Image 1: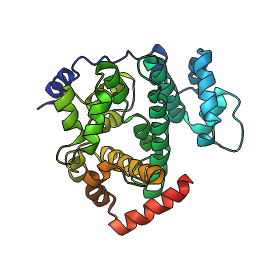
Image 2: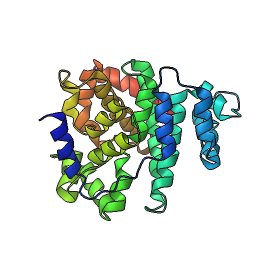
Image 3: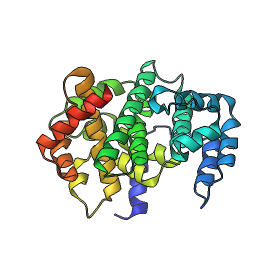
Image 4: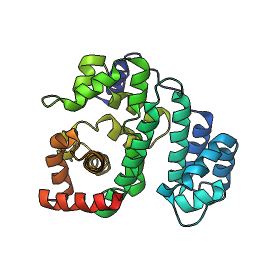
Amino acid sequence: MNAVSEEKQLQTMLNGVDIPPCPAVLVELDAELKKDEPDQRELARLITKDVALSGHVMQIANSPAFSTGHKLSSITQALNVLGTRQVFNLVVSQLLKVAMSGKTDAGLERFWESSAQTARLSAEIARRLRCVRPDIAYTFGLFHDCGIPLLMRRFPQTKEVLAEANAAEDASFTQVEDMRLGTNHAVVGYFLARRWRLPSEVADAIMRHHDYTVLVRPQEFSQVVQAQIAVSVLAEHIIRLHTQGDGEHEWAKAGPAACAFFNLSLVAIDDLIEDLRDWLG
């Protein structure tokens, strides 16, 4: 199947899920970031046009998660200290929250908090294992499940289906969603990532992040796509162990392939997990 026909087939799998349009500011930011030499003054100007947006970006940039030891006082300073991609992620995240506000229950805030924690830990894992750029790992960790809130808007039974998918032992997570909803959060997230100007390799990894055979098929998928998936599933497993005492169910399906991808033994992975639980505090 060629890329065009595959894209059309995936479009039919959306099953009526509405993908919000990309805000104009993201289109403009993306265009500037794609230049050979992006102008940080122009990036700052675009973000500060929206007072509420720039205020949120500064609030998060000065939060403990991004603490630099010095209070950041402007978007320009945030761009210099955190980097353009990190600030772009904060902009995308806030605009997605706004686009989805009022359409789901209060649990959505917990969803974004969980995604942010996965993103931060994914970046740390990427730094330690040097398997993918930390900023890419962060981006994927933050947005890999971004299709879930859109499923919740379309299908009232989404929470029930997700719980069933998480507990399934003989089917993949997305297979259960496909059977119950006629679509899945990975496909929805892929189209959202594409429309909202996330990097193409992040979008590709989002589409396949519950297909762990990707990790053992290097001829078909780039190392960047493989690494995002392996790092994220390890991060979610560690967070579940740290907060609830039992591991993430998906790790039982993904663990062997992830260990093989990282070229680490189960003992080495266990040691890494303990170190990262200490890092989480």
